[in-house]
Image: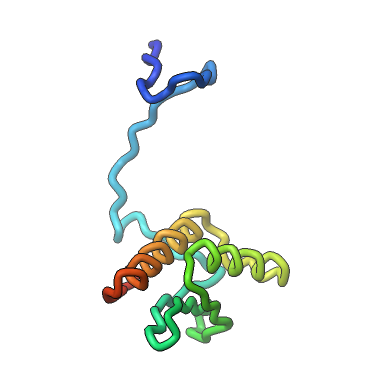
Length: 119
């Protein structure tokens, strides 16, 4: 069955096997899978005016803390460090996506001066 070209596609081509995929709603409890590489703790350091990301192992030891003001600066530094030092902290793509989402949320809270609560 042919799919109509999406209205938002203007001057782009679509693949021969292009399809629109409707995704199911994510269940925070049933669909969650841990990443065995690490977990992160994120907080705002109001006295310094920056965001801290603690990278932790599953023995609940904070291995490193990265500090910065912007989400992109932080996640880039964390991923670069992990790669350079062969840490393999982020094995699941959704874990990396979660980090980006949470860091952007923390960045916005820092900018407007509201409390940040990590999900």
